[in-house]
Image (tube, rainbow, N blue to C red; front, top):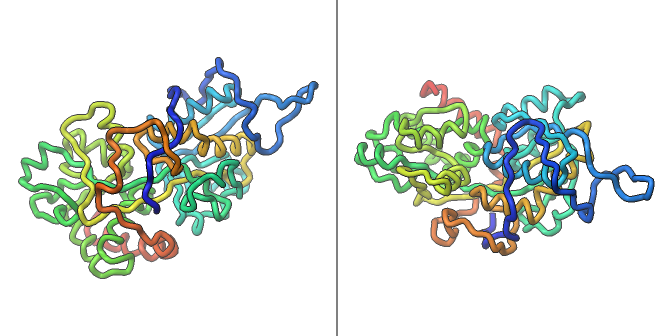
Length: 364
């Protein structure tokens, strides 16, 4: 991934969506935006206001979901939002099981390039109106994924427990200290997209997906690590003081700090950090196709890209934004590496097989 400059226009408003079908009704939609799929015409030949359901499977955090979907609902108040929140693995399994009679229209978040190789047949081909404005690394070259943000893996450290253990955590190698046994928490990369991102970073730092050094490190790390069922369980339990360190992802930690979290801090491993583009896609045979396309276009809009930054994420756009986030560090200040995402994606089945073998060995 390329290094990111800073990001797009200032965010005017972030709304909260409290229920599955929000009803924000004051703001009229901007009909100057290119409308996908062809909306019905009114008697005077002007496009009708988008309406009807949009059924969403999503992996994103509640805060990020509410901010982005709330702004979309404000823009298109007649669209009725229904959503199911789950891990990336659960969302993909559900989409696969419902193939031929999809109950969802879109998968919002949690999709990476590797998913286009293993699950591409379960998603529609669609390229957003603004895709040509995206940096090369975020262009929808396979016509499946709409990229909207990048995520950097990080370590989330509880100050008090780190001090009690007598270990200064600066990177991955510090996590092998016997003093941290049972005090490190991580998620399953076969079920969590953010945990897959973390695993990609470790493999890159220690020689690549087929490196004996890398898998020897993972084997030793598992001796100290406790596995949790979800990515949110990692950063929440570290903050709550259950674990000294969590292998997690930057946006969640940044937002917690932005909201006043104390007693925790982010560590970018000295061995190096990588980044990965995260995207969304339309489910094959979606029953509400026009609304699904409308949402994909919204994700790459200036307005939504600014919301990502407000939520602690690094937007896909390489253009400069007036909005900044004090908790997001400049990539020039950390050891930033470029991962071979193509090789990692193509060899994901073999990587998961080795991971599962080690996980079983350690009883995780």
